[in-house]
Length: 285
Image (cartoon, rainbow, N blue to C red; front, side, top):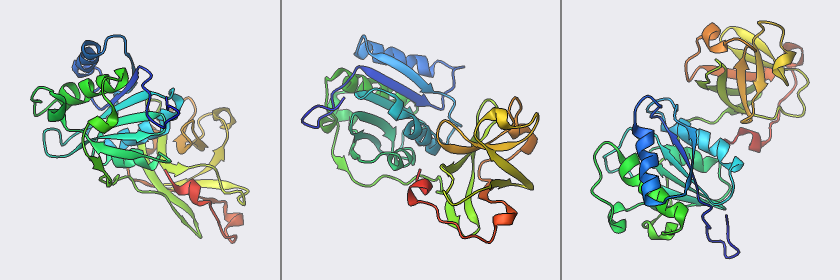
């Protein structure tokens, strides 16, 4: 929560986002360290299936999800292919929330989703932590620091010096032009829905939006049940992003569109002569 003086007030909740999966003990060990450092803290698994080595997707998930958690929450993200190198670990503070993340594009993507933020570099030596391993900073740095922040035993300003510039995200923003809005595939979920980086809403001047991907032109629907059986459609999902879906089927299996595949949202051909004006807010992550 945010105090009347603007300072972060811990609420005793930590979220975890990683690319560790759940087949190995890494997530459990991080939870064990948190429980040892701060008994009684509530730890919530946000996502442990971030695509391996894609920190920008971790930043996207947290940026799209953090607002559903109470103020006072500490969000931890460990998608960190540069673990053990001289890359920074940073703590971002935005009104009511703290975020611990590697400065490898993950924090930069996350910052796109925050209206206001400040950041400090985490200096483990200043907190008396044991010498970290070269391969598991989730256990040795992220978990104990998060526990101390969530319990209130340390404040963000005590972690290290301020940092103004973050390594930018590698996720491109969609582009708006006379022929529509062009984005790309980001990932697929476990249902086979294909997520894109095109956010809603549709420009108000459009009457019949069409989604083009590969050789397919798809109609845009409001709910999955609007699609005919087996029909592939576009729909804005609960994260506010355009996805390609086959209700009760897998668009990913049918289309086989890897990350980076171009996607275009435009008006149907009979409206092609009209200019398109999208709000700037729609094209921000």
